[in-house]
Amino acid sequence: MLRFALNYKGLNYRTQWVSVPDIEATCKPLGILPTGVKPNGQPHYTLPAIIDRTDPLNPVFLSNSIPIIEYLESTYPSAPGTELFPGGTKAFQVLVVQFVVIKVFTFVSKLAMEALYRSKPPSERQILRARIEARHGKPLEEVEVKGAEREAAWKELEQTMKFVQDAFNHNESGVFLMGDQVSCADFALCGALIFFKEISPDDLWAGIASWDGGRWERYVDAFKDWMAVDNHLAQ
Image (cartoon, rainbow, N blue to C red):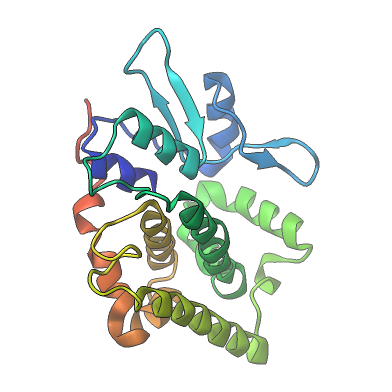
């Protein structure tokens, strides 16, 4: 989502990749705030995060996607007709991100937890396994649902995506949530779909891509101009 926003705006930036075990140790010394609280009450640090040093005397440190995009929109305004929060839609878009997109992400634990584990480099797997097992209270291999429960989860995911598709079908034109104009919520939804494609291309993503006449594959393809990580990089 952050990468989409930066490329969409054509800003110069440099990407610093951080492995999952190193997120907290990277963010804390930089003054990047946590985005939540762990079950044990300790602060929880997540990515994406951004540091804007355009004004070296007043650098900006932000975490969490919505605040970052709100900042980018206010500091580097989009041209009229290309805003990521078109007039009067911010509350609606936050609802889409916090409820619809989060709902879609819940299917990772039901259908693709082992695929997520396998997608990580060996150096991260032990820590990821420990976190998953602590969160779910069971071995990693038992987190995904099996048998009839798995079939029901697939049907639930398909119905969820159909609900989203029906909303899109109210547009008179365009492939995005707001029609022809891409929005913050689109970046969030597309980011979720790309995540599925990366961790489970032959199962979770293959199922989604086969629904609704290939709508979701076409939807992801519509973002290709904003996907490149090495675009607009400041060396």
